[in-house]
Length: 222
Image 1 (spheres, helix red, strand yellow):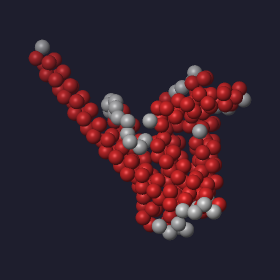
Image 2 (cartoon, rainbow, N blue to C red):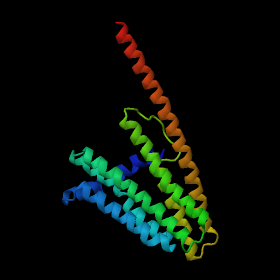
Image 3 (cartoon, rainbow, N blue to C red):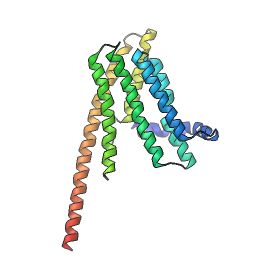
Image 4 (cartoon, one colour):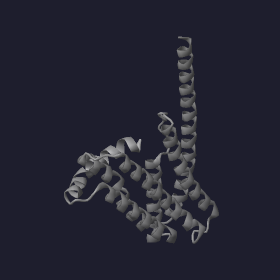
């Protein structure tokens, strides 16, 4: 849902900024690299110290680069396989840094091994969810399923919760419990999404194999 509607909205909003960067001679790949570096820095510098509010502010500022670089490429008419590969690969790096930073907090000063494990599960399941779609498409399947919690949902839920949880340091009582709840939601949602994609790939592969077998039989009969 967020990929379909929110991405379209922010793409329109960020188009003038993308055009400005193009006029300044900035390349889409540069925006991709700088955006990922900013997200990684925000996550691994602030989150392990429990500075969730400021960490989320920094991450949010840079996470929009994921929309800006693609917008720039389309305006330049230079969309390419390399750009898509770089963008997708660095998205995984950024996601890992976010959940890795949370895991480091709970493994250290946060002192909660269960939530550390949940954060690691969110990190790992996010990578596997992305892999199932990429692998399914690589063997010629459409993987036609909208998962319950995809990358956009994982980021929004986690970052909004982390940002609000950070307000605890500004004296807002009880708000820190929002982050653990969000991590459990992301973990369960990612598991459901993984199952959805595996079931879809199994069904599509069976249909493709059956169609190929029927085609071979018809060719042999003729």
